[in-house]
Amino acid sequence: MRRRGCHNYMLMENSSTTLGTHGLIRKHEFVRVIIQCLDSLGYRKSASFLESESGISYKSLDFEMLKSQILCGNWDGCTDTLNEIKVKDEIRASALFIVFEQCLLECLNHGNDAMALAILRKVVSALRLGKDKAHSLAQSILSLRDTEFGKMDDNIVQESRKKLLVELEKLLPPPIMLPERRLEHLVETAVSAQIDSCMYHNTLGAVSIYEDHCCGRDQIPTETIQVLEEGKLMLQHTLRSHQNPVSFVAWSPDDTKLLTCGNAEVLKLWDVETGTCRHTFRDHGFIVSSCAWFPDSKRLVCGSSDPEKGIRMWDCHGNEIKAWRGMRMPKILDLAVTPDGENLISIFLDKELRILNIVTNSERVISEKHPITSLSISGDGKFFIVNLNSQEIHMWDVAGKWDMPLKYMGHKQDQYVIRSCFGGLNSAFIASGSENSQVYIWNRHNPKPIEILSGHSKTVNCVSWNPKRPQMLASASDDNTIRIWGPGPSKKMQMQPEKLK
Image (tube, rainbow, N blue to C red; front, side, top):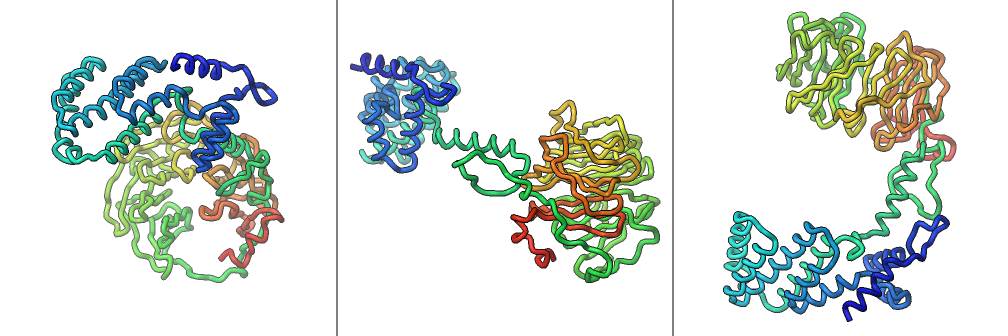
């Protein structure tokens, strides 16, 4: 009977009946996957009816045979079945190991130590276990015998056998068993591929599978919803202490503190709520050029524009934690810390980047052909972008797996410092200002901009994408205004200006 059943089963698996316009889907596999899906969703009667009507079983004949043998404790039959099915030797060995283990435990439970020892010898011989592994297995099983397995009644034994079946389901490959939730995985993969190819996708949550997914431009900021300019804003604090113009500021991740760098001057730490200066960082002519926060908002780093002064790490009380000095740390133009706090990325010598792992102290240097003016790190800390005065933005991976960067073009930058940023859901977009008074937005997978936003009248030198609201973007310009950008008309009701405090 088993040979006839196996023959019929193999005929079904080799059936040439296909589905789909391109004939790429085998009908019997498709039905099997549907039956599995119905079963996993709890529609077991429907799954059973479909099995009966189609003549196709969700679980293969080989596995049904194993199930019957295991539940009735026919360990010799189970071993024979596993030895007959076509699987890789390493999978067969793993399956036989957990079967022998269950058999051995049940022998011990019944007090049949001699049988258990015989089985253990059989396992060592059949699976060619090393001496250490065999000894470890014997010790672990004997210790279990002294605890719970000496008290197993028939119900517990049956539950243990069912757990063994679950392990075999995960272990045995197709077509003997199907991977868990196969249909859900296939659909989710198709949906994910559509989302990845969607230039405007920018929302969390489920998407409809009734039709192919495609977002419109109303998912990203494309229209000015508020203009912030002098005379229309409520002044909170005026921070006075620097002797020279302020060239750089950095908000702490918890939004309670602010760092300011005076041009060729010192670094100051401010309390955002009170507007008071909490500390001034001074160290024998250390001229600060840029600064960045660690994710805990308790530590900060700053780079010096003075060659050989290097980079310093401080706590908020002004205590130096670490320093990188010397010839290997020339003039620092800009720096940033990854969100996990492990990597420090800095621009030095105009055309070079250094990625320093603070934990391992390993480093990597990237050279560009044109001067770098600024850098920004993605929200997940896996990528960073640099602005070049060659009118390109380059994206590199922090891990160092890429030999070449991804490039983004279309904006204008050849005279001034322009600061770009990642933004949107999962940092899927890149935004940048431009010397032609416009804001440019790219999808990370496309080198050409998907949107060009007009509104400013002079150079847009900085942009910042709201990390909490993926459809909100701010841009700052030499026209003395800050523009808040939001989505198009169909999304305006979700982004009322009076809520943008």
